[in-house]
Image 1 (cartoon, rainbow, N blue to C red):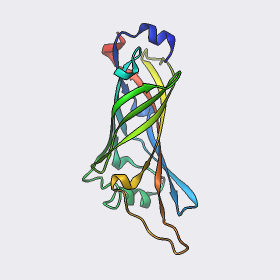
Image 2 (image 1 turned 120 degrees about the horizontal axis):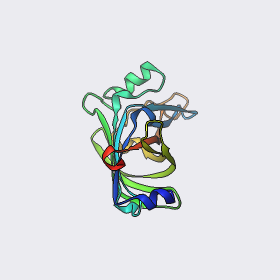
Image 3 (image 1 turned 60 degrees about the horizontal axis):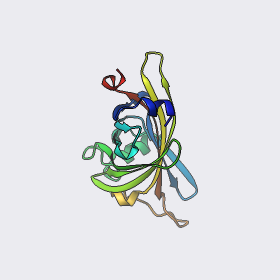
Image 4 (image 1 turned 120 degrees about the vertical axis):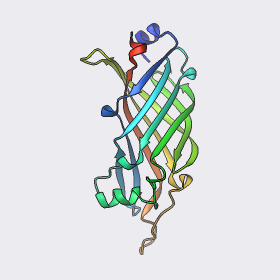
Length: 190
């Protein structure tokens, strides 16, 4: 966090994710020979940020599972089905932080519960604050990138298919990246 921002902070400020400039991306091995990537463009979230004491900060993020996009309509429909996300029964993926710890300049460890398909597991995101500034309309913003890895089977995403040559169609490890911009709420920006 910048010195200027730290000096002007008074307690916790509320920031909202800007859905037009935020998305969750993922990558998973396909046929054990390549990686399929996709993203969830519909993401919302709130960050309660205490610049002086990051441990007093918190994050909540909600992702619309039906918004999944892997650039292949058939695959996306399969991922929305009961075999994977079962979007009719589980319309959102949710992350709620439980602890935030500074790990160096502009780097944080964000620990919390990730819920997919009704299954919650603790995950740790490595987060980097990328910068901050004021947009052309006078809104204070900051950008960030967060990364983690999960085992999809821990969240009930167990569908797979054996390959004739050996191995499986879908890998277990999923790499997740959240790229985002947060906008200071109007109440805190005054």
